[in-house]
Amino acid sequence: MSFSTGLKCRECGTTYPADARYSCDFCFGPLEVAYDLEAARGVVTRESIEAGPNSIWRYGALLPDPGVEPVDLGAGWTPLRRATRLAEVLGVRELWLKDDTRNPTGSFKDRVVSVALSSARRLGFTTAACASTGNLATSVAAHAAAIGWPSVTIIPSDLEKSKIAMAAIFGGTVLGVEGNYDDVNRLCIELVAEHEDWAFANINLRPYYAEGSKTLAFEIAEQLGWRTPDQVVVPVASGSQLTKVAKGFREFIELGLVDGEAPTLFGAQATGCSPIATAFADGVDVVTPQRPNTIARSLAIGNPADGPYVLDELRARGGDCGSVADEEILECIGLLARTEGIFAETAGGVTIASLRQMIERGSIDRDKSIVAIISGHGLKTLDAVADIATVSSTISPSLADAEATLRFHQLVAAS
Ligand SMILES: *Cc1c(COP(=O)(O)O)cnc(C)c1O
Ligand SMILES: [Zn+2]
Image 1 (cartoon, protein in one colour):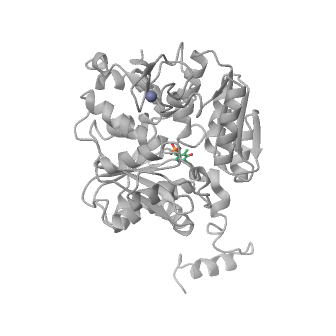
Image 2: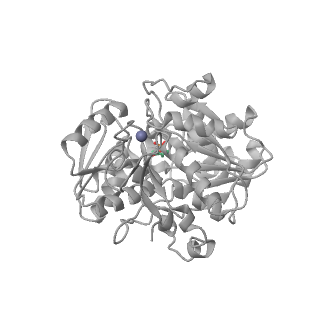
Image 3: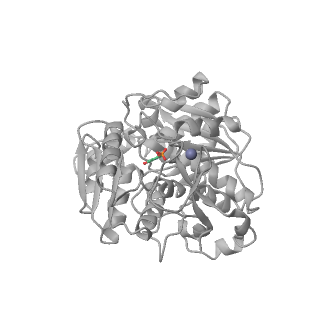
């Protein structure tokens, strides 16, 4: 049973029923799902959650009503791993990795899509759609396929081949737009007005979609033994994930489910698309749009919808926002893989490189606990690492050649 009560304007507080709207009739502010946390207190307990499924739906009481049953490929309940070897390299005491590569379609987007399409089905929609930088399209297409819905996913036409393949294989319609994500998003806002019977996960269903990201905070707290970490590093595209991770920790604290205070949040962006990091560094409230140019395509949103709210969350508790070059992103994909055995896509490289940058400049405290969110699998962006991850040597099929080469690589002693 869900304790959601409907939608509420973030700006003016006007409330609405839980239907397919996303902006306030009075002030055009974004709408959020609201909950009766008073009623949930004492009913939603550690025990009731622990008795739930090993997916995001163990937190169903604190998510939008999914109707009869959720649209569920098993998103969430991904591992939270103590990263001792990476911590040693970075010189920090307690580092944890939230390994969201381990989702049904390989990215954190499965969390938000499972929630969005559940709400869409409850509301009577029968077609799924989205504006995407790649991972969302894949997740929408997969979840739609699993319930027999047609899907229309719209992406920049020059995305990584692997991401296009992952979106297209599920059989929906994939539209490649000659333009960047911000062009795609603008087009989709026009399409929503023409096709009101299409559930655009991140546009007309956005309030529901966004709630899925709270489950990252819920899982992190539960997996730490019902305590909050001190610091959390979150990759930022539109900023939805970061703002809802903050909301998730607040809800758990308000319900008395966790020990500890709300963590300090830190953003992670690629310098080639860093509108929020730039506004943060400049100390301004207005996020100036940028034209993206980075290998971190999944984070390449130049005009982030939740930008101002991300700035609020970063500033609320002394956070910061990293901005890292493409070379650092690649280097840190390798660093993460070599130290912890996790292969992340470019967004994961952004998170680790930003983590390192903010440790070095002292905004992240080395002695306090840190969680970094690794949001997508490396197989999604194989092309990005094709030049740095190659065979060590090419040899003839002869023992002599093999042994000589192994000596060269210092795997066997020189004779
Ligand atoms: C979408 C995405 C994010 C975060 O996106 P927001 O729009 O900020 O919620 C982070 N990592 C990956 C891999 C993504 O696909
Ligand atoms: Zn309003």
